Image (cartoon, rainbow, N blue to C red):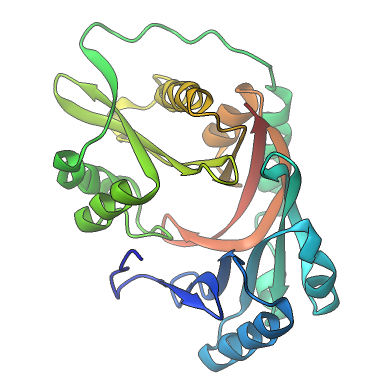
Length: 284
């Protein structure tokens, strides 16, 4: 189990399930239900949320468990077909303990970004060649300090402690593969592939580019490189959870052939505030 620093939300085993919870995103996130009994897990999460004053419970579950969650006040917000073993759909559900948490202030902007992204959807895009002094490579533990500095510069807040070098090294040992674009020996852009070989899915996440290097399609380059490596590993379903108000990231995934799977309302503390997030997915 990866230890999470105390200044971020806590990740732990809870009633045999893997959850993340805390005041940063003011929620419980059911990350993996594992072998937990939903009949016991659902009321236990309710009690935990009430005792901590959380305003949302967010659950990612196999569709086979949907009925009990929906009967308990959850609502479907997004889905990824073929998430589990390339067969079963993953549902992203939300339960709101405070009605204000469900109200989106930037709904018009969110819809404009989604419409723009979907208008750019293509199956395959030729990427420009990288300059001669630029390389894309896997990151190694020795990069962790510089990686944490880059993430700290780009994000005012993040749901996971990627600004902590120890966390980065620990996740490298677990199931995350980080990739970087390096210019003259300096990391300019990062992303990661959080792999689940057993279920044959991967989350394309942790995209960040230093302000001075934006506009160079680095996110597209990193995504293409990660997809190719995941295909070589036999991973069949890729997905991402992107900031709903970020035109760049939503366009990046739409251009790469990803399908919009839904929106997670006021779900994640990122870039200094709690924001809604769009889910995109693709069969590799």
